[in-house]
Image 1: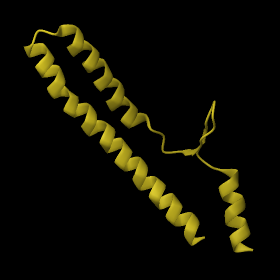
Image 2: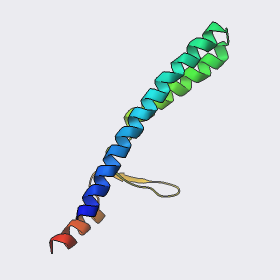
Image 3: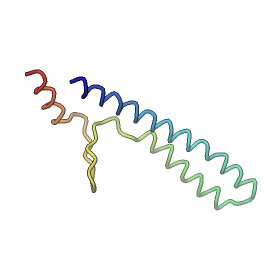
Image 4: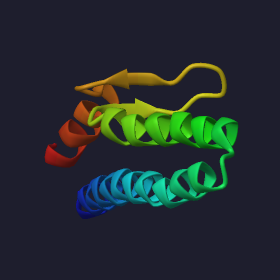
Length: 92
């Protein structure tokens, strides 16, 4: 049981660090946009701004739910049957 809880704690902190990393990285690209505008490279500034927007939005939409990563389509849900089975096996 201790291993399961510590694994969930690590995963929770990993996703928080990932969210904030994406936000800070996106915000730091504003320097690139300002530099591109200063150099009159408006296409570069527009492309950089689009990627900034995607990166910051992605940081807010990383799910808080449980995720099973699979090659083609990941499963996302709030309650995992596997976790319930693990919990029952430890209490028996």
